[in-house]
Image (cartoon, rainbow, N blue to C red; front, side):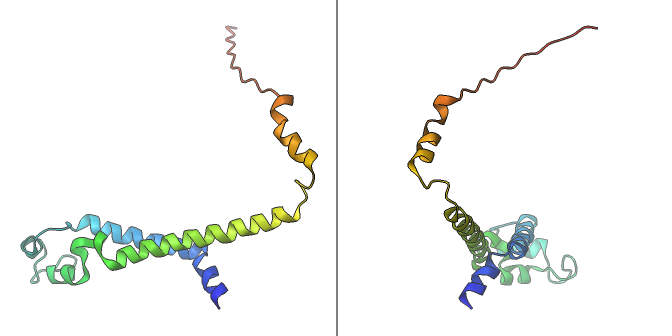
Length: 135
């Protein structure tokens, strides 16, 4: 149960869904003026003629659209997205480390010392020459 919960959070589709929700909320926070007085919202979003047929100042205040980036639900989506990225990274790197530990690449000292002395045996030269041919 616990493992499947973490696997579902680490799912790429889940992370993309949360990212889309964050993007939509950020669009709302960009379109609606943030941290203004109630009179500003009453003037720009009247109850008698709501914007888009449903968006009036009282709905903006109730849902917290007047300060989207400071609301508990926006911060929660950011934290859930961060947790999704962390669990995805953990599961991916743990699989890679399991696969690497089963290989015997660094099983003896000569392999490790040859990697350390790699720079002594090879030199890399990066030169750029430009030849212009006027034929």
